Image (tube, rainbow, N blue to C red; front, side):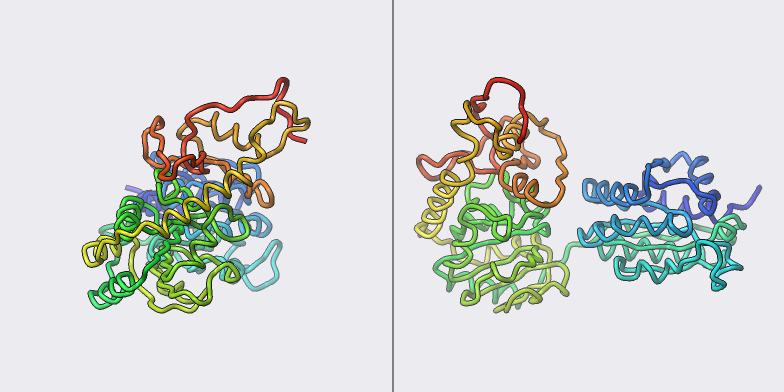
Length: 436
């Protein structure tokens, strides 16, 4: 029986790590790997027009699935095109494995045609970037790269020459054991007790959530109900926390709207849940702040903290909720919800009502109509600039809730808030829908 090539072993290890697709552009230095993918029943090669698009596609799939995804570029300009997409995936903290094909191994270091040093080039946008220069390094280098990408939620890059990929792989009795799920981390009892004390001492608590609140929606809602806390969010927390949220006060920051800023600054205690919110000018300076994050390097790097809690948001709140006394005073919460409703009425919905005679129509109105017409499982992507503002304010995440479920506001007369399903269609201007 013929031995596996390094390329075949590479593809086999990726498939056992859960990779379903390999995005890239075929090139000569990639030929052994693309041929191994062609013969694999487990991984599909997705040909893109440009390597940058392949890296962005891998990052997008990783964001949607939470699963390790892969992309590839051939030597020289091929793998250099990956860098924008890899930066995006790395900053978005999603697991992506990139293969940077290299020039012939004997020519490395001679300023050969299309020579670069990919193991150096991608160091800033990856947790791991290494060169496979001998078949015996497989599959350990690839396994290490995979564990970095999954374990640290980011990019790992493996560089490999085409001639190395075409050689026989070393014989292995069994394949490497690969960890494909990250563990949940619960803080220690001392940290939970101190956090409970701070919550009990505070008269007004505000929660501000980021992408680290993913899959902790129920826990956040239960805690907000127990301590009567308004809940704001960063842009990357929107899809996880804004749906079915009767405590919603919108978003803070450059894209902010609603009462999130006021709720953060007028509280006695601000709890940052799974967010590395970068805009320090929007964070309060004279409020007690607690930060909960599964990545300890994020703790305290944006603001002064009264307590840093290293832990998963869901696990932390599950341990915390039984330890805090239930608050019965809703005055702070209701005041923030009222401010939020007024802000939505005055600003967010101002461009989407009484539109029958507007020519050209407002782009905000187009965003609102897209939100109403989109399928319940639609995925939106937005470019930079004002279209991000429109997405932040007018697109409504619906989470796992049934499509016909509508959140009832807690304040009389509160209009639709971005993030809740609209119960009725808007009037439409006659003619085509054109944005000027």
